[in-house]
Length: 305
Image (cartoon, rainbow, N blue to C red):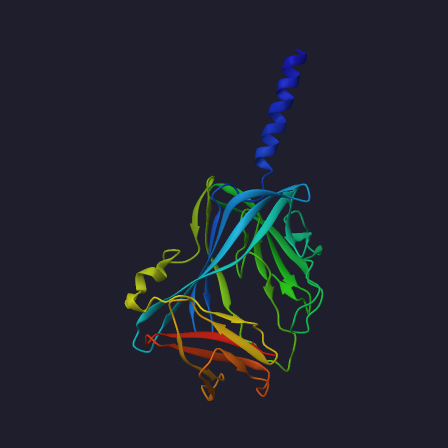
């Protein structure tokens, strides 16, 4: 009898464990479409491995940004993939934590109730914002893939450096914006155009694909009609820029010239080397156009502060 009670207790614990999982499973993969000032495409996030950080078993999430562009003649170009810094998360109870700046902070609190808040742990940014507080407005449960999931409608407090806005869903996070907090601009004197990012797809090994759009998660590949213009990525450092910047291209490429335009399309300067001084430029957003000696052109956004 004692053995049966013991076995029954184990089964209860095991079932409770199964039904208390509020975060990702192996094979987790997210897609987000984005629209930028001079490009568009999608972000892809993959759960690739587990790792131990400060005694916590964390999921390593790799991020990639696939960059495309289209010209006035509806010709589509693939500009390459930018590999972003990986992120690390772990689940404790109903709360997902994110490891950033050498510490863990709350990313999502799926057990929160209306009126509750949590601190994302982002205390400042380059655009005069401050502590990042998320507040829950309402809570409901929805069913996706025959799984009941808690949903929280959240909003940021004023002047938050990082933020979520809209519904966050316990299996895969934000259903608008991005998986991780977006940056906010609190400087009324500095017009900054950041990428417009929106959730499109999620799946993992125990959760079939959901697609919030009417197109394939990576449909941009089907639009490429100028494959010979596929180019190697360039890097710009630093960005944002105080006075000087350096443009680096891959070893098999060479720069013919660099042009910088303002948001109105006005040409501000032409440069014939990769080291550029823009200390006389006003603060704001600019378009940097790099012409390579093989005839290819790369465009990137830069921010002068």
